[in-house]
Image (cartoon, rainbow, N blue to C red; front, top):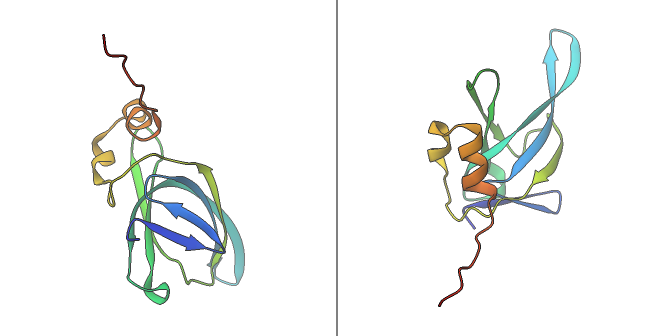
Length: 116
């Protein structure tokens, strides 16, 4: 599937909120940094060149996007926080939405109306 990826036997899809624990090297020091955001896009046709774009809203509505190769040795762990019911393969439309509109679009459940 083009809109999902598998990492250590876990399946993640576009629209899911994930937390990525990433190892950063600064000079001769190493530290781990958490990056929690929504998966916008999955790119690459094989496991060797698969990349994921993750977007988070940082401060005052300013969005930060990060493109991460999945075969990187710097990824410590990937945790699923919230599952989405999005059906699109690339959800670029969330760039223009506020936090509340985003929650309504990605995580709202559809209710069926009774016919009279």
